[in-house]
Length: 119
Image (cartoon, rainbow, N blue to C red; front, side, top):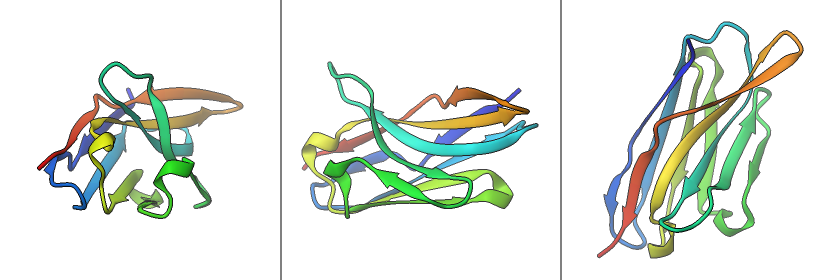
């Protein structure tokens, strides 16, 4: 059974930095894409950044160039380095993985990690 476990969330002051990690376990097939989404209170979940198995990143316009996504394919882990964080980026951050089992892709989500940007 695939599990995604996030870590690294917490409280940070505006302008500060955090690094989120997400490790996938129980993967039988191949990971196609891993990424980070966030959901603020009362808002819809939105894509923050994602990265393909070949290392090609994609970002929401609002986060470039302050946030950087990277991956460690050997360990099925994805990272999100966040810099110069803003108050409005307070949200639960979710890890997502699209994992291929043959020709079929399956979507998996982590439990989420809270990021609070506040002074």
